[in-house]
Image (tube, rainbow, N blue to C red):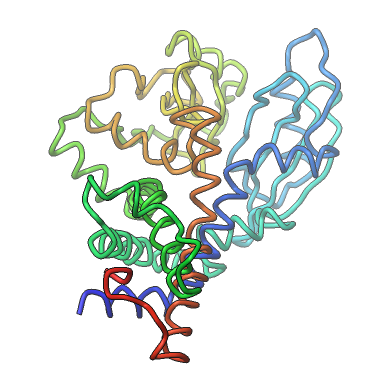
Length: 365
């Protein structure tokens, strides 16, 4: 019964597993590929003077007066531009600004280009929030598929090495099945990690709450609202707020800015410690845009165990938790579902076409 469930789940949605894995492999190196193929948006000539953050932000507001300013991705390297996220009529666009000359280098939709399309498919299945939710349930199915495959294929520790070999003198069916089993056994830990962390990111609220309940907090608090300022009060500039945030979390570099979406919302700075494996960091500072008061200070170094485990979801999913070797492993793991789908489908098809083919029970179990 378990073998039939594993078989039909693999056949019915194995193609989705394959596409998700292939897109995930490419997206492991998303930033590097985007910079390479869209260097006109990212590359600038660095200057000795400080980045003109306030003027660049004002430039975006002036050039796009009908848009809401959402986020700013700060340069990770000296020769990078600032990436601003703006929204109009529920359509998000990205604007790239030279932080010294203030030249607008270009604009594109959130999911523009091949990489944007692949990201939209991998995360949302091209269907927005509904696709994201479906993706979460597909992740659960993939987890069960990996576990059932492990149960069916596990030969025991003593026979493990022998089970990984591809027989040369057996029938074609036996060789294909052996390849299917070998790929599954070799990649099972990585596939399980990818499926588990991907599902946990979709259901992040429930996952974080469970981890904090089991392993302890404190967790990541919600930034508090602020009192609405009088109209004549001039807000503090982003550069001053950024300076306050970086002094609040020593030895951390700001990576993202989140601008207030309404008058009561704070200005939020995301920061990264050098040793943090998350590309964007997991420290946050929320500030009052009028008084400059620090409303929330979440330094990842002092998070509870539950929150620290929760913060590992994304680094584990893309491999950065183990540096470049981890990214290469996750890249390889993304190819495994395609190999498993093709070898499993072929094995099933071949057995149906040639039911009398030589294929011993020992090879199938």
